[in-house]
Amino acid sequence: MASRATPSPATHRLPHSGTTMLTVHSPDHALHHGAAEFYRGRLVPCFEMPSRVEHVLASIAATELGAVIPPESFGREPLVRVHAPDYVAFLESAWAEWSALGETGDALPYVWPARDLRGDVPPAHIDGKLGFYSIDAAVPITAGTWTAVSASADVALTGAKLIVDGARSAFALCRPPGHHAGARAMGGFCYLNNAAIAAQYWRDHGMARVAILDVDYHHGNGTQAIFYDRADVLFASLHGDPQVEYPFFLGYADETGTGAGEGFNLNLPLAWGTEPAEYLSALDTALERIAGFGADGVVVSLGVDTFEHDPISHFKLASADYPTIGARIAALGLPTLFVMEGGYAVADIGTNVVNVLRGFEGG
Image (cartoon, rainbow, N blue to C red; front, top):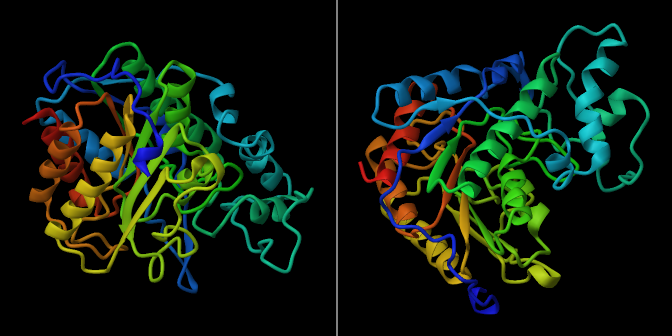
């Protein structure tokens, strides 16, 4: 509840006009290219693929948006501010442990510590580790996964640093995405939680309150869990109703935070077939909560899998709706970091992402 938070001085609040938005991108994302994921009883080609980024880059190049720059390297410390050190170590070593068995294909889990099994002791064997540190079988680990996911975090951190250094906005073209990754688990194509890492970086560099707005079709369960007991980071998400949609086990409206974080988590689950007017109404609700929170900056988990032709999603937004989303976010008047999440209609992803960014920029 926003009334619990006294707005901090708006020292970071900026006018709507400003310099052109920079995009941060690393070609290392392409080193993570899983062959398959387990989906509805069968192995299928991964929906999350390198070509998603290439389509976005091509669309940015065709616009008046700013330059594309490489990320800086931030090392391990910002990662373990959000993720458990043993989990980060697992991600770094998993491929070496897997290949030491003589395996050459992707590493995927096949057993998980469900309710009647112990979930407090990490196994020593890689097969057990893969299940212990995951929530599903949509997270293949390949020879290049650690390089790609650590570069993705550096992309988000570079975008966050640009804003600390005075930029009004930035776009972190992260891949793999991050919002399903918890403090100690990967899932839903996500390994390191880029949005959470960026938000914590802002907290560590002077922002008293940070808001995270998740507009991806799927609930950002990892981001919610990371900040669920905190009052300094507000998480607001509009997403497919978890009664019928992934991640199924988090994202309900009655999840409002715990302890000091009570009232600082807002979930707005929406039904399959949600039309643009209903979606934008929910967005306005989330933005009103952020405005009342007194945030010094907002991280946007930018998923465009809300698109009407997305192959694994069920909302009805058209490409022409995305500039409106960007413009309404801009009306907050806050420093804003866009962090790339989902969007699996690959041919349209670039158009939809650029439409959000151009709407934010007023174009």
